[in-house]
Length: 255
Image 1 (cartoon, one colour):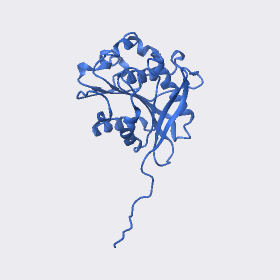
Image 2: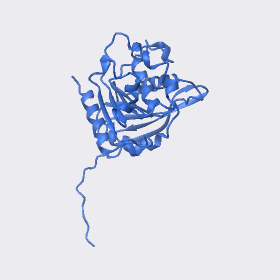
Image 3: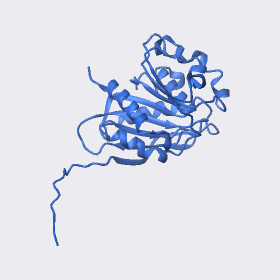
């Protein structure tokens, strides 16, 4: 019987999963997140704080493990964050939860190989995108923070928004918030963001809300994809993963 010696690298290849980490206790329940960590220990990696939902509820985060692992293999730590649904805590509790999760992750940066100076928000679906964008704008506004934002300052590098074609059923939540959204940022410069929109420009959720008309967003990137019934794992084509990856790599370059 012939035998062979495989001359292959012996380094770890697959990202590590840390499941159901409690990051806060609110509304009489523990809020949890799943963490995807690159396999090798090569220092501190940029952090992506990911949430998913279309109507201020949580999608099944396990659907996103595989596509997000592809990003983790490129040198990112990715946290899939559970937020409180609307029937437990009304908007903007979901934004406050993302801010709390961010602080938890940064306070455990050394344990999970996180670079505490390079971190992003990513919302998948209309309400998750809106909550993530609002979190990036209100990190220094105490009204949106359950922690003392002066003691635990946050400064996100950018936000990635995967939106839906229709304002329904989220329009009732957005109606009283969108007009003044950017006023929360004050006089600081806004970051350039990445918007991935299902459908055509006419269907753009963020354009319809007037968010992309703000002068600070003129350098943000907007891509349109053919309409799909739902933003599930099938939405993550290799092409879109490559767009996100290139955007993040440009943002994480150390100056």
